[in-house]
Amino acid sequence: MIRKKISSVLALIGCLTAAAAIVLEALPDSAVLVFGTESGSVREEYSYFDTLPFGYADVWPLLTAILTCAAAAVSLAAVFCRVKGFVYLWVYLAGAAVFASFLAICSPVSHFTAVGLAIFLVSAAGFAAAVTSLYILFQNNSAEADG
Image 1 (tube, helix red, strand yellow):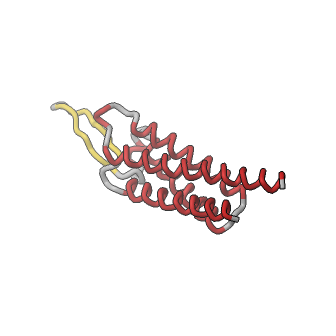
Image 2 (cartoon, rainbow, N blue to C red):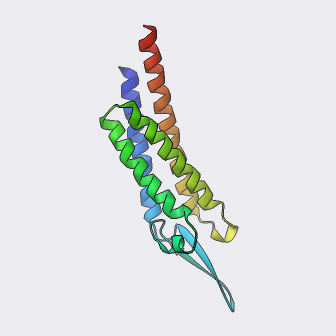
Image 3 (cartoon, rainbow, N blue to C red):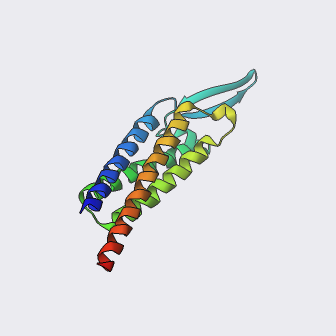
């Protein structure tokens, strides 16, 4: 019983970290494009939800935003419906969002932003909550099978 409550609290933490990541992704200075001009280069910043970086073949910010929104929805479902399938899906989506956010900040130094790093760290915290919740559910199932 206590493990299910802990798992629900972890799912709520995952939902809150996903919400924080979505807020950070919505900021207008989270994704960067650098354009070359005759006089040098111009750095322009966009939201992760903006399609302009996607149009210039920087797919990772938009993919991160979509995966984070999906992980938030699934973690919210995992809070209310203690179905193991939701937790599995939450782990996969959160892991994919962490991977995409990592690739979004692995650009050259001119593309790096502190907001991008914060998105990666918050997404990683949500992924850790998802994996821990799944581990607790496995411990719960093994305890029921043994007892």
